[in-house]
Structures are given as C-alpha cells and as structure tokens.
Image (tube, rainbow, N blue to C red; front, side):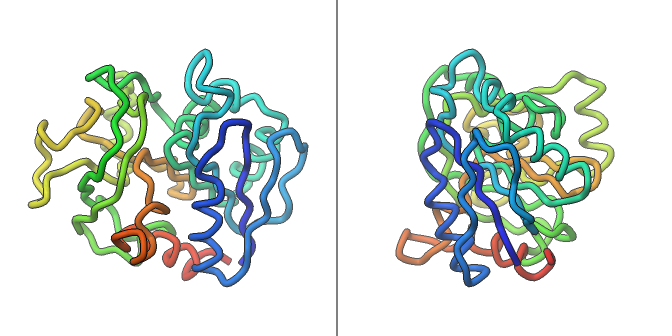
Amino acid sequence: MRASVIVFPGSNCDRDVAVSLEQAIGKAPDMVWHGNSDVPDSDIIVLPGGFSFGDYLRCGSMAAHSPIMRDVIKKAKDGVPVLGICNGFQILTESGLLPGVLIRNNSLNFICRDVHLRVERDDTLFTNRYSMRQIIKVPVAHHDGNYFADNETLARVEGEGQVAFRYCNEDGQIVDDANPNGSLNNIAGVYNETGRILGLMPHPERLADAALGGIDGKAMFASLLETVH
C-alpha cells in the first residue's frame, strides 16, 4: 500500500498523520508539496490538518486552488480514496469533493479538547475496523468546524448515508451539549456519494498510539490497510 500526504503552507499535522500511516502500513508515505502538479501513484491520499495559507479568506479556500489539487481532484474522481482531516475536510468542501461547508464555531472560539464520536457506518474502507454505533474518543482543534449545508443538501447527506461520525456524549446520545461547534445534526464527518472520500473535523491521528493517551483513532488507519490496495 502506498500513501501520499499533501503538505500546504501552514499544515501542522502532516507529520502526525504520516507517523500514523507508517505505523499502519509499514512504510513512510510520500510527502507531496502543494505546489507540485502531480500526486505519485497512491492507494490513499491524505489532506492533513493545520492552517493552510493562514486560514485567510475562508479556511481551505486558497489551498483548494493549489496546483496539486487539480491532480487530487482528478484522482479522487477516478476512485482513489481521499481522507481529509480538519483543515483537510475544509479543503475537500472548498474544492467540491464533499458536500456542505465548514463555518465559524457557534461559540466564536477556538476549541481544542477531546470529544466523543458515534460511528455511523462500519462498512466503509475508513471504518471497517470499528463497529456500528461504536463510541470513540478523539481530539478536535479548530475555529471553523461548524458543519453547515442547505436543507436539500443536508437531506441528501442524511438520506444517502453519507454521515460518517456524529458528536455525542460518552453514552452515545446525540445531544446539543455534546456538540462542540454547532454542526447541523451533530455531524463530525461526511463521505462523498461513493464512500471513497471522507472528511472529518476530529483528529484520529492524535489518538492513534497508546503513548499519546489513547488508540481510538488507530482503527481508521488499520481499516485503510485492510481494504485499500
């Protein structure tokens, strides 16, 4: 399995996700600069978290127009799996690869803490090592993580099973108190129509090793190893 991590100016989680990928697949991913025009042949492309281009204009909007994104979009449309974490999720929505947008947290504050998530599907290449409705704990760290979509788009995302994770309490209840940023329907991550593109605001790579204080994020990378080839 071969992985590529796209590095933008302002990325700060590229190394973290590279470490998690290497632990899962047994070799280091290609680190691809945003100014390049081509992504190497890859079984998975990852857009990492961070603050690409300083989050100017809108988060992810400038990165979505980086030269490398033309090839990322092409390869994604050809079926290469793509994972976008935090800022990577924002870039995926800005580039049109995922529905909806990420707007300012309803508190207007930067949020950095652990949250609980409920796994909404266990039949995708990103989640097959989780169980349906499993409750996991991973960190969030964002200022613009509030998932929003118009009514028609939201109905389609919900109706076609494109919700990947929802914010919940430790008992798995989908309640307002468990929603850190105001996201509609407590949505923490979404798939595209094929399930081969995933964007999520929480950081699985930050709790993918026991030395970091938890391993709930590790199963995502193990899932990729098991199903992507």
